Length: 415
Ligand SMILES: Cc1ncc(COP(=O)(O)O)c(C=O)c1O
Image (cartoon, rainbow, N blue to C red):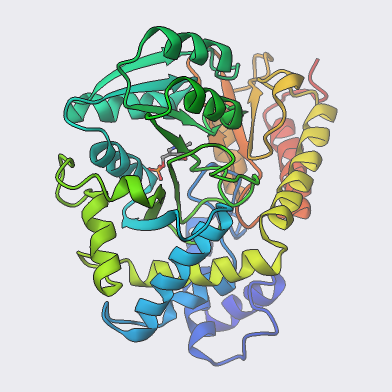
């Protein structure tokens, strides 16, 4: 078995020259590859073309092989390094902003911001054009936070003009929130224009951006966006492994939020105070995940920072869009909404033999994992360009899509 796995690892280039045969790392890689081979009918390693979880580099996974205690100096330093780099990636100064990591997936951090910054008698204006905007509304509902949802079409951007009208008429809001890249469709919202309006019309309101799927890949300066709070998570465009999210916050405001949170573990103010006091998390920290994230940040820098990462994702998307157009697949969003290069939604083909479940499963058997759609008004599927993916991975996916359509008797190019 070991020999088969070894051959497989070398063939698939899972083992690189960086790893010496016989080391613990290789043995662990063998385990992973064996598991993949077992779960995968065609012995292909899985590639994730999804909005998350995303594939990450082998070296990022290797970074998790060390065990650290929560008080270990090396771990405390890692947390410090991560907090510092996140503020820098947001393009802002350490004097004004702070990064607060929090255990859990991205939604935990979203909930943590909302529960901590909206005062008991506060009110949130949620600008919604998809599932992730609606998730914020769901959080507010559960937490009993007063809110108004202003909805826009799932295939259109939030309109800054409408935001201006609302803030001109209604002065009751303490928070305005919006999603940067609505990953449910791929729409990129004009967060800078909205921020200008919020500052002009309602200077004391906190402006909150869910930048979950864009941070680290779409250049974004929090100050330029007039943004007070922003959230993302470890396993998105910075390409760490899942396990924690983080909020980047205007420190002065966060410091005014003591005692507001409706939750103990999601209290962002207390999480911040704990980290400031001794560099430690209040509760069991995601040690291995943070070690991986540190490595991922170093790899982001080596790739040329946010610009470099953006270039790779744009290259992925170009291969995907051109290839899918050649096969006759139609995109869900208009050409005017194609600024984002995070994820692309494609309409289901209308041919009678197309069935998404079969399409998905056959692609998955070939090691290509795509994602169902998440919009309410159309039958679409999504293909992500983010994570540890390269143009050659997109080419391979297109080849597999051709094969699967052929197996399903779906004639290409679609008409
Ligand atoms: C824009 C956006 N917000 C929120 C989330 C939720 O994050 P999680 O699934 O990590 O809780 C996602 C997940 O993809 C997202 O893309």
